[in-house]
Length: 174
Image 1: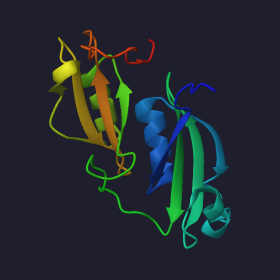
Image 2 (image 1 turned 120 degrees about the vertical axis):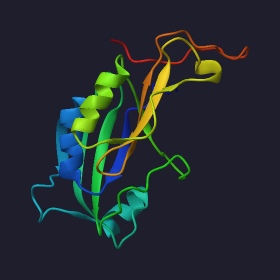
Image 3 (image 1 turned 90 degrees about the vertical axis):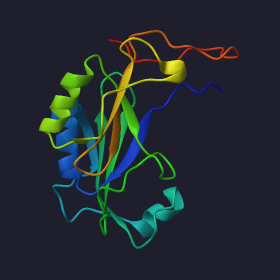
């Protein structure tokens, strides 16, 4: 048995239409399919049906579920639930998956594109430090309009690996 890598990440959003539009327009993603199309408000999956599968509380309903392809990396699965969730809660102090990172060649151009689609950026870009330090190695966090924390990262300079490291960090191909 070999683990081949992350196939997809699941993100619960407050507005799936807005999240899909952001992923498509700001991140050049494409929709692969919609298991629960947000355009069909009568279609939903009840929490009572999903609880044995993934622990969804029975009082919640899945009212949108889309699978997207994002560049040369893992797929992204978007969920919208009712009752809804609050935006602006994402931060790295939360338990569980708290952000995803996108490798970019031009951190400023990518940030401008995301800003044009409603992302709010924290201070940055910031130079990487410790083992990630190097000329041009930078990171910059933003909050998508649907409340998900996204990190932009660029690592044009080599990384400094710990002496016991037996592999190098995977980076998306150009």
